[in-house]
Length: 363
Image (cartoon, rainbow, N blue to C red):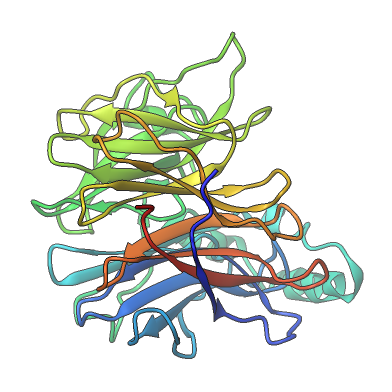
């Protein structure tokens, strides 16, 4: 294990509010050189109807952050938040949500239950609203993040959203997330909640089905594949996938034809997910993930050979009070150090908040 020198900061704070739960963040560098961080916040808990997508900006390389702006606030629970710059002048922020039936069951403790029941009572949140907003949602800005489009829908979802390709456009690998629950309309071989699907968009408005990732089993056991992230390298695309239900680890798959076909996923760590990958200016690939066994926290691995082999684990945090944490995402800072942001609790009786850790590649 490697434990580098780190500097920890807090990005989205709970401020002792009952709506203080924050989770599932992403980060990127904006079009003005600032850092942009998003998360799902203003929540009662891990699942609730009140989640909103929040955006905060840093103009000093991550040390301080602006008061959060509300970017998406649908009648449903706006969850995982992804962000990326694409086509040189646009920013996309992504999220997803649940059906009303699922949201109306959470949270269940204390007076939060009364707040939930009041929200869903008297048919305030209608089936028409659900039909309009359910699914994988996103907004786009073409003025460097000053204003945002109406809420639109993509066919798939993943926590950190699509990847911006160097030659333009977006590639999005994720779990199918449309109300009809019928991915077979894209490919007759597809089944709901099994294969991960891959789509391409040239402009962020229209999505073209490309492929699906081979579904693999381990000794005949069918694990659930979800929450992937694609990294573009010089000669290939590499995708990292969360695998769970009896296992909590990261798989890797590769494509040498711009995402039209993918190799059989292989497991690359013993424990830890969901993954995010960053190509550092040194050529190193930095993979980060949440660690949900004791000691709870955030970890990383480095590949210096185009994802052929991986370093021993790097411990960024090992002080999480419990396993409600993770979803790290990283950005390179101007001095070539790394800022990794993630969610976890500060103490066992506090709400989840968004933290950042600044660290350097091991010598």
